Length: 294
Image 1: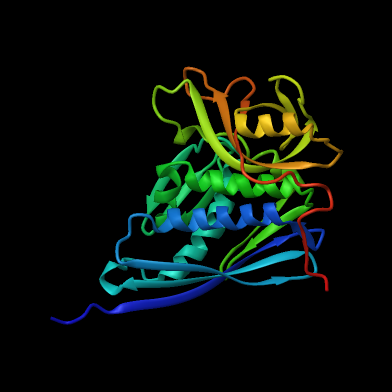
Image 2: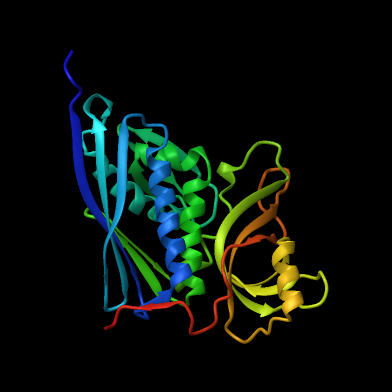
């Protein structure tokens, strides 16, 4: 019996964060993890497939991260003329382009045309992505949430904007785009739900701590928010140690966002925020900076 032929491919894409050449180490790790989540969702369910996502270099001039997708796949599993790595790169850039295109609103229409998926937004404008991405994106909210996480990190890091660049497409976000992508996409909500729940990893700037009781904390996320902290072990520790908080301190968290919906599953009212777990140490303003301007 002949061995199955293994197809290998490599392609690159990059993130360019405009502005400062340094970044919080915790925020960098979240960008990397959410990028991995996007790639994992794109290849989920494909057997006999190996994907290794590598960071090849950091560049100066702003803050640039170069990625290389190294893929191996059994030949008879490939149904598209492009290599798997090219599909992944197109999927990553397309995911950011699609989130920007939808602007937090429900798609007006979704149509498969050949190997492409054409999405019409609420303004009547169309955006085309590979069908592989379209299927993965609208199956659940994992890819969308990962893109939103990265957009929120850029906004919290006070970046003027960022680029996601592949061989065939470049997607640019600026400050005006940030507030448009954080809304829930109703097409991905489950039936009969009155609340949409989204879980995100984020870096929150501490605005108003509660050092005595169990009231809500004030944070800066994409805007000023109040959140309940459910990590009792962490709360007990900072209460016992009488931790002092200063302007600019940040907290890495795993957070749940609950958005109320009307009978048509359209978001209504203000979301509520719950910090489920503190995921790292308190970040002081000058701490945990990686500076490559050597």
